[in-house]
Figure 1 (cartoon, rainbow, N blue to C red):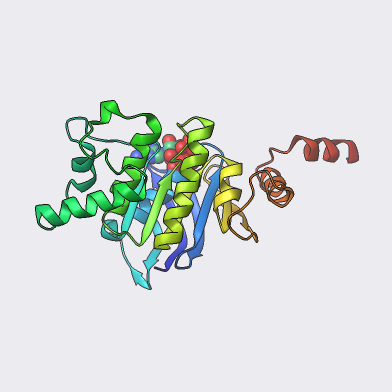
Figure 2: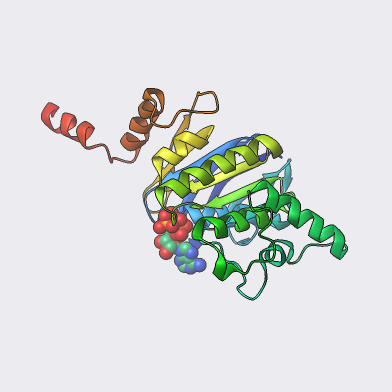
Length: 251
Ligand SMILES: Nc1ncnc2c1ncn2[C@@H]1O[C@H](COP(=O)(O)OP(=O)(O)OP(=O)(O)O)[C@@H](O)[C@H]1O
């Protein structure tokens, strides 16, 4: 699945919040959108998903201009958004087409993929935050989306659960090779997971840098190489205090 954004922008009630965002995601590529709060990351994801069709510019999927691509995308939000009155399996298969047997088989398969085989009959209230987010991942995968859109999917989780789910995402990616667009605030997460990171800044939010992470997978958390990329991102977002300090004393 090839995704192409050309000069995508968005204005709400006369206020421009995103301007001239252009990039291409190759099939199976993992792209990170990173930037300070309010620069329009979620707005861009919503435009790609088809949840919002009032954007400016063009979004093409496999060369076709499309404003309705929900069928080809799976969305994972910061919070799991499960329906409390449905079981885990029913949450995953809700809205799926096919016979009951087919739907249940698909739901069980993806629950197995996210490490929740055997939890089908539980209700959301019995799940930890990490388990609930695993269900949300299974629900996004069950329609076999060609693009997975993740909006700060792990930011509400504790540090250990977050790392486990980042590794789970890598396992899923190795198995399905889905194109992934990941919105995150977490620079370690972006450098650990992504092939390319697009930094956004300003209001309206505009692209600043596109940084390719030339590292084999599996990557080593905290490696010196990833730290170099991290520095480049911090510089792009003007968050690197040592660089600011050097600039001050050199000016
Ligand atoms: N439906 C809407 N109506 C009006 N303004 C909106 C709407 N959706 C988003 N905005 C505005 O657009 C701007 C960008 O919002 P968006 O949620 O895309 O930013 P973000 O980079 O994802 O922020 P965060 O990192 O805090 O989640 C914000 O100023 C927000 O108030």
